[in-house]
Length: 151
Image 1: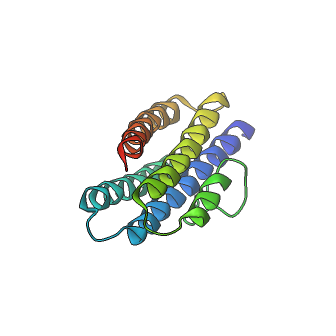
Image 2: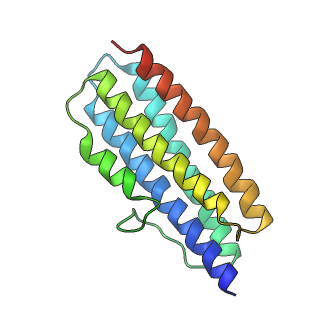
């Protein structure tokens, strides 16, 4: 029973940080200037991706009989970083926005690594979370490359 509760807690942490990630990309969208259509479509894609990940994780938690989170994080060590990142967005400088997005991606990658390292998740949770972690790693690398090439 304790293992199931711990698994649901870990899944809920990931739901919250994905909600924070989606909101962070929406905030970044608002900070962009008009000519940044490449970033706008990318940020929309990543925001939608996080909403999808939250839905998948919610279904997973429900399978294990747990109550699921629907909001954003307010406490906890796995998801505080996105709150900090959201507060740091300033102006509409492309490189600064990408740098803050990369920091957010670093935070969510860490949350996924820690979730997988806990050693209490059932096999189907490990499969889903590992798949999501891989996609987030790819988005991190894309944002980092864009940041590195920004003027």
